[in-house]
Length: 159
Image (cartoon, rainbow, N blue to C red; front, side):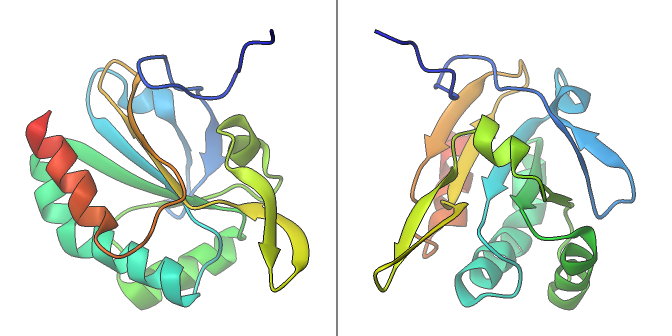
C-alpha cells in the first residue's frame, strides 16, 4: 500500500517559496517558530466566491493577527492579477502566485473539476492551518465560503 505524500494533520507542512504581492518570495519556513499560518488556496481572483472569501479574511484579519496568525492566499493567477485583486479589495495580507501549479499539487489541491459537464483542472478551495512548529494543525477541504473565515478564527481561539 502506497503512503500518501499529501499534507496530513499532525505532520510537517511541505515548505515552498512563491512570488507574492509584497514584491518578495514568501516561504513557509520564514514563519516557523513565529506565527501560525492560515494558508488558503482559492480558484481565481475576482470571482464571486473567491472575492467573498478574501474579504471575509480581510474583515477578520486584525482578530486573526491577535491570535498570532498570518494569512496567505494562493491561486494560479499571475502576480499582476493578484496585485489588482489585492488593491481593489484592500486585502491586508499577501497573495502568492502559483502559476506553474507546483505548490497546489504539493498540497493536493490541484484537481480535476467538473462544471456543467465540462472537466478541467483547477484548485479545489482548501485551507490549511499550519502551527508555529510547521505542522499541519487543521485542514478544511472543499471549503464552502459562507462562514469559513469565522470557522478558522474559532479554531484558533480553541487552540
